[in-house]
Amino acid sequence: MPIAIKMPALSPTMEQGKLARWLVKVGDTVSSGDIMAEIETDKATMEFEAVDEGVIASIDVAEGAEDVKVGTVIATLAGEDEDAAPAEKPAAAPAPEAEAAPAPKASTPAPQAVAKVVDGDRVIASPLARRIAESKGIDLAAVAGSGPNGRIVKADLESAKAAPAPAAKPAPVVVAPAPVASPVAAAALPDFGIPFEDQKLSSMRKTIARRLTESKQQVPHIYLTVDVRLDALLKLRGELNAALSARGIKVSVNDLLVKALGVALVQVPSCNVAFAGDTLRQYKRADISVAVSIPGGLITPIVTDASSKGVGAIASETSTLAAKAREGKLQPHEYQGGTASISNMGMMGIKQFEAVINPPQGMILAIGAGEKRPWVLEDGSLGVATVMSATGSFDHRAIDGADGAQLMAAFRALVENPLALVA
Image 1 (cartoon, rainbow, N blue to C red):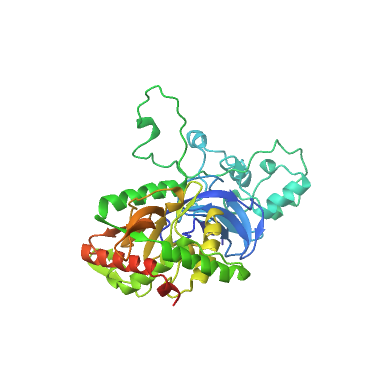
Image 2: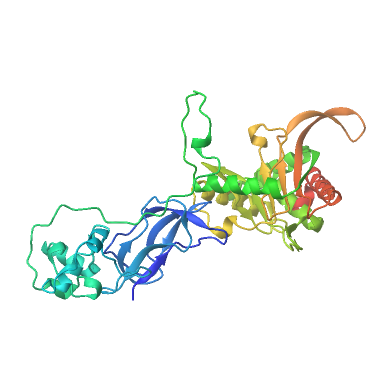
């Protein structure tokens, strides 16, 4: 029986995707595990594997089609000489012209009349029959089909004679329905005579726009900022890198801040939570989502159990995850989940900013640039210190201001006394 191949849900939150590229064509034989297509989700381009064996009977969604909903039939798989029509499709109906025309006379051979029924511009035939016809130069349009609904099968070609084949036509496809226009479509923007160029949004950018809008509309943000002295952390980083250089590991400031946030969340568990209506989920582990800028958007690969991992392990993991993110090769489990996020724009010279919470997480930490500032030293004298501003954005439905302040204080203490991060 024909098998319908449907648009897969490549992640728990995926609702639709872009069929970026087909790696098979009609007539190809596939086995379980073969890569059939590349599908672009809101986070990455992923390979789609076959789970059954058979022959590609039809491709129903065009390469490059966007906004293909999960569950949509994108192709049909049949047996080597499967006579059944593709799954998930009704029997082909007569063309509109045929419905208005007089009924054929009894002398008209039924198979020949049905054989002319087409799916688009394609004569209905089994994959094996198509390959035989192609190798023998037989025009399928001139062959009477004896299979169900006039489908041409192998036996119909045994007595057929080769004939000049008509000009080749591209394989028919059924393109996914056009996406519904965005509420802020380009046509709705006023034209003031300023030169412009419209760029179509990627699946990732559409998802970012939707999720961040929902976050700001539905999540009551509260922002808490602390100034943190970095001198001790920078000194420790230099010592760590000197010790780890033989192993090819280089620790960044951000790696140490990821560790500090993970430890702080364990120390202040009331901030390691997620709000879900009438439920507050309390996490028992601190998984830190690290914001990484990639072409076309932003993605947050996750350092799992950041509080328990060594700084060297975090450095290796973040480096690998960032590289995979920029290549679009992250797997869903590497970027979905997380209990809190960290976004560092200090390397871009940004002094301070307020990040948008990534639901269902309850908080995100925004890191600004470390810079030389006047500072009151421990002995009360005025000196110069390397200081950064860190701003926590908290979901006020789940986290009270006092709890958020406690987390920020714990984070600052860990950064200013960093030996606790390697103890």
